[in-house]
Amino acid sequence: MSEMSSMCAGRSARSILAAVTATMLLAGAASSAVPMVSGKVKFEVEANNTFDSATWIMVETPDTHVTGKLEKTYVPDCEPDTYMLLFDKENGIVNRDDNSSPLGNGWASGIEEIDDSNGLIDNSDGTRSLRIGLTGRADGLDGVFNGLFQNDPHHQKGEFTLIVTWMDEDEMPCPSPMLLPDGKGEIANPQVYVDRFEIGAEAFYLNYVVPVDAVSASIAVDNTTGVLRTCRDVDYLRLDNLVPLCDYCFTQIGGIDCECRPTDTLVGWFDKLGHLIQLSYDWDNDTGYSELCFTADSHGVAILAVTGEGDEDFDGMHDGGPRDIIYCDEREWGHGVCGCWTFAIRTIAPHGEGSPMGPDDGLPSEAELLLMAMDRGDINQDGTTDTADLGILLGNFGWILTPASP
Image (cartoon, rainbow, N blue to C red):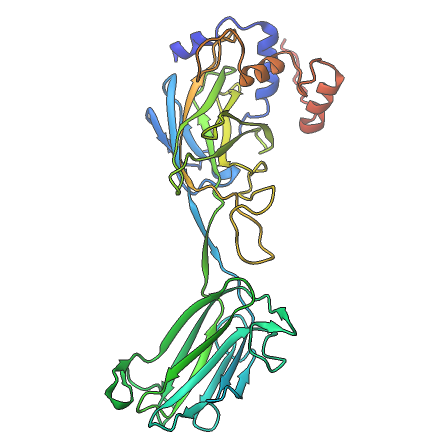
């Protein structure tokens, strides 16, 4: 700690006061119930995608690295409202159903007790067929099976599982496997088919050969089996054991996403109530790697979060529209970034000797300009310190009355 403390020495009284103002926002930010990580190289621990579940990281050296991953998240697929038709050899409709399946959410189709009179079709060659059409409601209501309803797509999207069970004369499932006619092989019982409505205009036609011993059949659709993978992870971090009131930069130095490209991150700095104080910027435009500079609070704590580019409110969603597409019209959009990341935690020299990631060119970096503005009390960074800055502080955090020391 002595090396880190020496780097923060020599700050003016006004600078210390401004740092206290900024770091008051962070005091007591996380509870002791969150996981703690120690060592020079730290790893974020899932699940830490909320402010209250931030991974607790003990910073023990002046040059510490934190690594983690924006994970893929599994969410339920859309649940399509299906419509089922059974056809004869000439594609005439002999049976139909809307919502009778015992499976699914009540909007799935199903037909029981299908026999030679209502769906098992004699092919006049010693075989029988079960010809199924499965589409999205309202296709089929107009008597036409084509994915449309009066020339408009049915708009149903999502995965479905169709199950055909062959029954014996006692209306019990036949033992599996079952023989096909003319010794053409065996099939399992039940037979399961899985597919999904991708664009909202599909109509699926399935033709099954009826097994030798089958007397009847039942069909059930489950429209709740789908799962989608989306990129909407957010990694919250509580950095502890920092030098109180010292300035730091949290700088991305590595990370590859699931498509072998640099992981395009966004970092936020938060106060003790979870309010966003500052967003990072891209220090490397070629990679999209982020850098955020912040001030440790009087307890040596800072709360940061890593998310995907475009998620400026850190809820896992892309704020500007579709990026990671989830197929239901009602669902929101994930930020679309899944990949590993590594950040370095570094102290900032007290007099602006250049960016932590570049040579000293005599000019302050963007992050240091922000800290200089904070040192002046210029909260809104308009170049002046006035009542507008005080109004921002009071509006967000209220009055804090501290009795004078005797």
